[in-house]
Length: 264
Image 1: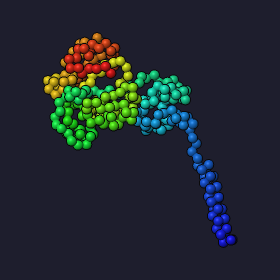
Image 2: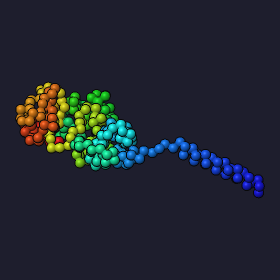
Image 3: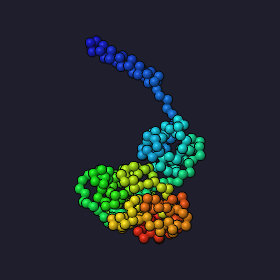
Image 4: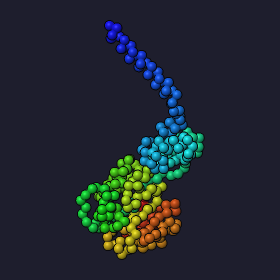
């Protein structure tokens, strides 16, 4: 009997000593928790999109808690509610910046408005297709239409309709993941509101644009003349609209014969 009990007692004693040692070590080496960090982290949605400029939600929460930044409105997915919660925790005034959404500046693929230069059979990736041959769109600045923006959107705010990406404003959080994913730089984040935008970024001259796309901007300048607010300008053969000046009167859209201008 002694031969059985002795080993059990020895092993049990070693276990107790080891456990006590680990308990003491954990108490001595414990990293103090930052309560402010924990509370801020609970407010953040956990999308880890990086739109705030930090390494995900953890990085943004740490920066706020440690005083690296006091900007409470950097979390695009969280919106105004999260901004207010963070501001309250930090004891600062909430940022008043408006909500932003993604805007796609090409509608050439809708209803086959743009010509195609070839049939593509390969990896369904805009970035891959661009590296191989530039995409099947005859417009060198046009949408490739293989849906990288849809795949990268963590909120399922983008769908592909008739080969063209469409942003659903009610779902878009303005995280910017789609902006980074587009190899043609056709997506931008703009303040959500009743303003007009140019759905084209072609920099070809007018005659060349007309041959390859029915809805391309040809830089004719009719929209510039129609805008009484000075919100429209022509840059490198393509119109742009300054949303801060746009009053949504719609005169630029009426003037555009190419139907390249639409309400945001």
